[in-house]
Length: 197
Image (tube, rainbow, N blue to C red):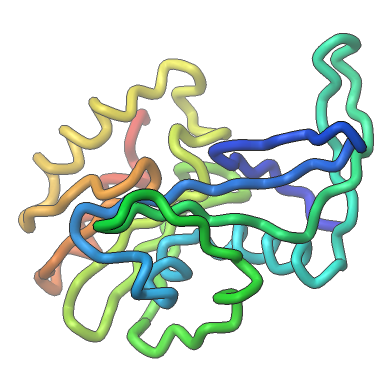
């Protein structure tokens, strides 16, 4: 059993009681529609493991909190997860199962950051072209020391002050460094692991 709370941008329950997951992804830097590898690079490994288990049928129901009673109840989940990406033609839905096994050939290495979001720690992805992606499982984080006081805008401003390379806050849970210095991974790790302490 996977014990992880994930957040999707849109969760729809149809009349038959089936849950449908929809993830939204935006980039001002990269055309996501023509780059399934980049879509996968921007999905946190824990979230990807859940998505993979849903699409392959390993997970066919999930627990959700009933809004009336507050109790957790099991509901069936549709195995077709849609990733909605921006493109020059507008928003386009991509079927996650169609891209799930795309090789991530440009990924050099993942660096795990500890002490930020228990059980869903952010990762720093080093790409062959020298760029970096800082990927969060959820933003704001679910289990950060600051709890509800966590301010995403403040976090981004402080990250910029603590990292020597420029970056774009390219999506809610993705920071994109078009180019990076060898010191950036250390700077990012130090900042994120200590944020709020």
